[in-house]
Structures are given as C-alpha cells and as structure tokens.
Image (cartoon, rainbow, N blue to C red; front, side):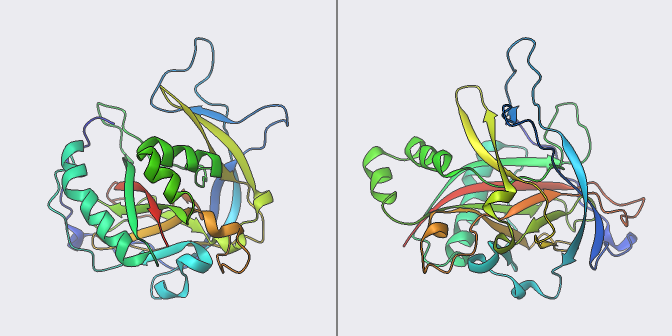
Length: 295
C-alpha cells in the first residue's frame, strides 16, 4: 500500500458540532451493465494496454439514512451485520508505517473482534487500507463513494486457502467463517464523508451484482448492491477516535436454516453530507479486513 499520510491533530473546540440526525441524500450505487458485460476494476495494478481501469459507473439514488447516534444498540451483527464498538483504547501506532500498523494496530483490532463477535475463536487480518479526502503527492485511496459489499463465497474460500496452511484451512472451512470489516477514524471526530451501511436483513440476494477486482497476481469476485426501497440504511454521526464501525460483510451461516443470521452481508458506502460545514476537517480513516472463525 505504501506509507500513509501524517495525521494532524484537530482543534475540535473551534468547530461546530458534526452533522447529525436522519438525512435523505443521494448515495451512489453501481449502474447496471448489459447482461453480457462483467463489471470489473483493476486495483493497485495497471490494466492491459487499451483497457480502461474500470467499467463500473455510479448512479445516485435518494436514500433516507438513519442516524444511529444514541441508538447504537438498536442494531446487531446477528440481525443487521452491523455493530458499533465504543471505548476503544487509543493505539500508539505510527500510521505512516505499514509494518507498524501490522505490529501495533492489528492486535488491537483482533482484540476488539474477539470481544465483539459472538463465538469468534480465531481472527486472521489479511488487509488494511487508509482513505482520505484530500489529494497527496502519492495517490492514496479516497473515500469510496460507490456502494459495495463483501467478497463472494468463492472468493472468501480462496482467501482462507491462500492465507492459512492447507490442513488448518480445510479444517476451519468445515465450521463457520466470516469476514469482518473494521473501520476507524484516524484524525478525531468525523465531519466529512461519513460511512453509510445497510442492514443485511434488508438487502436481498437479487439486490447484489457480482463484480471482479483484478490485482497484480490474481482476481477475485465481490458484490455490490443495487438500491431498492426495501433496504434500510444507517450511519453514525460524529464518529469519535475511540469508536469503530464493525460490519459483517460475509457469513457462511447466512444460508443455514435456523441460524438466525439475517443476510449476513452488510453493504456500505461513503457519502457526502450536504450539511458538512465549510471549514470541516478532511477525513482520514483506516479500514481493516479480517477472516473470523468459530464456532
């Protein structure tokens, strides 16, 4: 990924409170392509000569996004694939250094997942990324303004076999396996481009379009939602440095009768809140992806 930008401290006392409350605003969703065309994107690698880096295009839908502030416990991983983690210790991580992130931040994320994901017995973090709203000399990732979901079942199984030893991978594939997305702000309270997420209980399989992400050495499938009125979207206003948004973006139990898992795959997207003050700080955030096993 390269190094990450230096994170300045904010003087929040000079700012108005961050935008809060429910809002109806445009969210971007992937535009449907002809049935004979597969949506794709080249990620951190160049496409073949003459091939665009992506054919995915966004189109807006007006969505009412409900504020979870003060109602954080009204949603859950089992029903919605959403959980708000609070009172997280502030880590002494150098976010300019990928190795320091792995050494000092990954253990914190693993600890929080083990404490907040029911029946979690093993956590393996396989990826992280940092997003920001300002261009830097190196093109880091901006907020992701087109809604996405998690990896497909085939892609998750491939990931497990890629990251774990063969014997352990095959044993763990006999039980429950999940992918958890763990999101935190890096520079204090979020004012700009908050994260919206849809309850997995309201996202139907037919709402999801399969897409392909091409990396340097491999390709894998992921899902992206098409907006439908039956979906219910949320955000958490003014996310603080000691909070995290934890999404379950894949759960192998989602198709098991009687498991109680509703959907098991939250959808999510960053959005531009029109109420954001003109002097609002940029948003820097870190997102971490983990394979979670058990029971």
